[in-house]
Image (cartoon, rainbow, N blue to C red; front, side, top):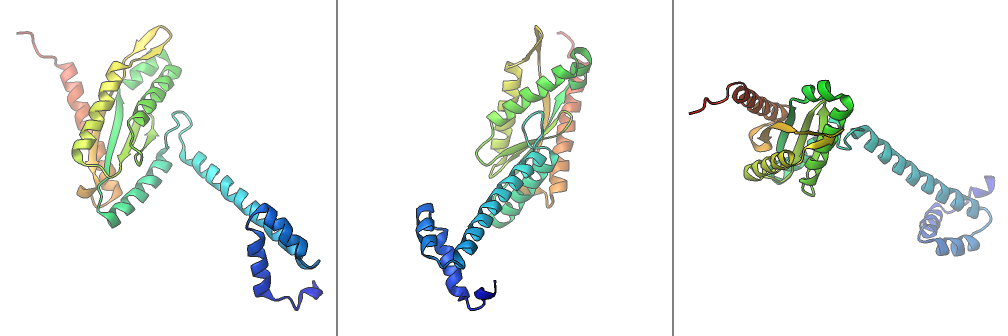
Length: 229
């Protein structure tokens, strides 16, 4: 490298930039380089290629870490990460994000009666229905067990209510077929909006509390049906 001492660094940077324009231009440019510069340019281009490949691999690994293997939705880690970004964007734009928590009703009974494979089929079914109703900027995750979370970005209360009713309707109309059985899937939902809660923790907690209120009300009605008139 002793013969590189007098190399004009700005010129070298210009040559590297020019060499990265397109493949045929690279070959023509490299052909005109001095013997000392040609290997350096090639090495630089090779490093750029490796860097791009590494960046792609990192993104793939991040997606794997953020994805629930069973349903294909985000896992808790991925959902929280995206919700954090959405709430930060809300703070700058003034938009509202609605968070919905959904918990399946009677899911333990499904596992006990038909086995965990049937329960897995139910979870995948619910995930497909949720994804079907998401908007372009919306996202959903499986927080664990049979609990799901949905974030409706740039959404208002009425649209969130409509979303819940649509998913409920689809669940009621599409039982899961499992070994000649039709498994009816029901869920309890709770929602909260980012304008009413200063932190993500309070936002999720509020939606979770509302979901449990609805679940308790449903269980109470089921346990105490109205007497016939």
